[in-house]
Structures are given as C-alpha cells and as structure tokens.
Amino acid sequence: MARTPKPLPELSWLEPRLRISRIISLASLAALAVLLVIWNLFFISRPDAPGLGAVAVISIALIPLIIIALGMLLGSEKTHIWACILINIYFIHGVVASFSPEQAWLGYAETFLSVLLFCSAFMHTLWSFKYKRKLAGEV
Image (tube, rainbow, N blue to C red):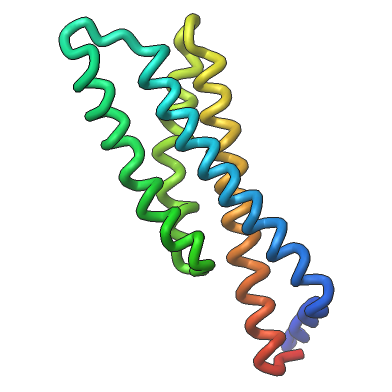
C-alpha cells in the first residue's frame, strides 16, 4: 500500500507564519541575550573577580548566541536548525538554575525563552522548507 503524500499548504498560508516565526525567534534570542547579561552583571556575586569575572562569563555565554544571531538575521534555515540544537544548553542551564531558591525566577525566564526560541526556530525551519518546495512547483 502506497501512501499518498499530504498536499503542501498554500503560499498565502505559509508567508505570514514564516514572518511571525522569524520575528519570534529573533526576539526570543535577543531577550535571552539580555537576560544573560543582566543576570551575570547584577544577580551573581563574584568576590574574587568582581568586574572581569562577569565580563568573561558574559562573553562565554554570548558567543554561541552571537554566532547563531548572524545566521538567523540572514534568514538561514540551517542556522535555525543549529539554534534548535544549541539552545538546549541554555534550557538545561535554566532548569538547573530554577532549583536555586534565590534565583529561581531567572531560571524560569531562561527556560521559557529557550523553549520559545526552540519552538519558533523549529517551526520557521519547517515552514521554510515547505515554502521552498511549494515555490519549486511541488503539489
């Protein structure tokens, strides 16, 4: 028994979803970067290295986000796929941080933003591939 392939959605259905998912993924990426900077500057005490320690941690935390931000700004589907993989690091960090009583809300925020970024980047990739298949003439 051969399955009949499911027809692709219309371009008019895909275009607004592509735009919205890209906007949400970029906004959640920017919000996650801002959260990490604020968290490391104001909510973590480093008695050994007060200024330089925060800059080093922020730099290390933001390098992966900056790399995927460049590709996401250009609209690359492959970068959105890599964002789905890479964002799991921030999700795990947020879940672990949510167990800390004094900083649980920061962990919840990081977890929420990473899940939002994952879902929006995944849906953008899915809809983008369908959009390109539809443009190529596939039914």
